[in-house]
Image 1: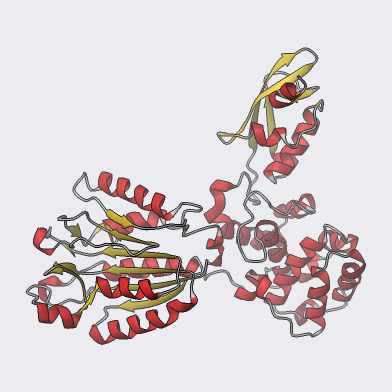
Image 2: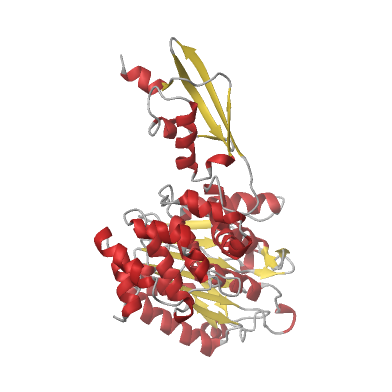
Length: 467
């Protein structure tokens, strides 16, 4: 879902109204949004003129997006039934209706932009009413109605205040929000529910966030695209290689041929690649070639041979961008999204064996860093340090077969999933090979603990199907 975000953080109010952490909060939120692949408009210590420019740009650009997010960190209050978000030139200590009208963003300005926009989902997050002391009900936000398809999230409930600090250089609310906002496949409503519970607990019940929603569809901040992190050392066009544009030179013709699912085209492409010096290829070309060598190795024997015998030629100054691309392709699709449950397993035995070679060490460090956001979803991340994967198999003897009751790995019950891929009547060797494919891990690292020897396995659903 194409998403536009407007993020504003204001510290530099006058006198005692100055804040310490609002800019930190906005910066951190902006960085997360960029890693999630959102387009971000950012304002820091924004005065009235800056606010006008930001709102104009937001209103102009929102027409081309599926979803929008507005985030504000700074002073906010209600005055005569209107909710105001203060620019740094607002006299926060003693505002009147004229100052508010000229030096603040009205919340209704944001909702009016949203009402006219074609976006299906809109999220407004207000971490305001923030000072180092509690602010009373006279400065809290007035009741607000969310336009259709919108959720409005406040750092406090009505008539509560919020603190500027409290959590590692952030407000307590944004600090908690940052803990959850990058978590995969967490719906926006479930996310804010978790934030509310954690904020209540960490503030000892003194602060409770509040949301008003009229969302119709679902929205997930992170559907697996966190890999777009700006510190990955390759261009976006090779991370999301579906948008790669060919220059129609020999290198791009090779890449195009490798993309086909036709070994009669792929094999000659590898032969042509072998005639090109590694030094003639830049890192982005090598990376995308590596990705396509992996996918073509499912069909072309030359690609498999390349992985086994030619990778060393691309080691330059301790880096191997071809191998980086191969490893990346195992875990991420052509949109740069994590392949949840659908990892590419071509030649992983040969690829994972390279983890023990010093010349490829940096490639395995690279993939470990890229996979960090997804580590809870993976049973194995390739590394030179070998961690044994313990699998516990509990079975009962039932006539001539061993009825598998549970298969557990890393406290996860994978019994049902294994029942779909294991052959009925197979032994423990077959089970281990299927575990290797399911866990996407080297077979030698899988330790199977069985309460009885598996000679002829069966699963309960298979037994039931026989009757």
